View 1 (tube, rainbow, N blue to C red):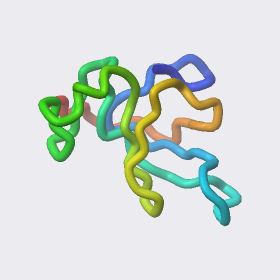
View 2 (cartoon, rainbow, N blue to C red):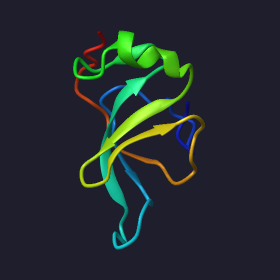
View 3 (tube, helix red, strand yellow):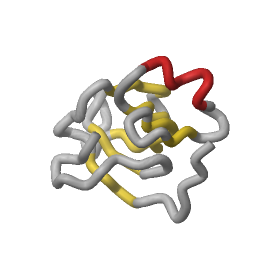
Amino acid sequence: MHYPDGQEMRLGDRVRCQIGRGAPDGREGVIVCSVETDEYDVDYPREHWSSLGVGVLILFDDFGLVHYVEADEDIRLVARAATHGAD
C-alpha cells in the first residue's frame, strides 16, 4: 500500500489520519503490520496476522488497532521508523 504521495507504507511508520471525531488535526498511530511488504512488529507476529491477506494494521494512540485493506487518502506519513524490525 502507498500513501497519497506515492511512498510505500512500511512497518514502524508514524502516521496521522482523520478518523473519529474530536481530533481536528487527526489521530496519530504506528503501522504495526504490513501484509503486502511481509513486515510484522514483534507484538503482531506473522503467524497471527498474515491471514488478513492484504493491507496494513495501524495502532492508533487513542483509537486502537485498525486494519486497512486499501489505501485511505486521509492517511499521511508523519515520520519513518529509524529501523525496520521485521519478524
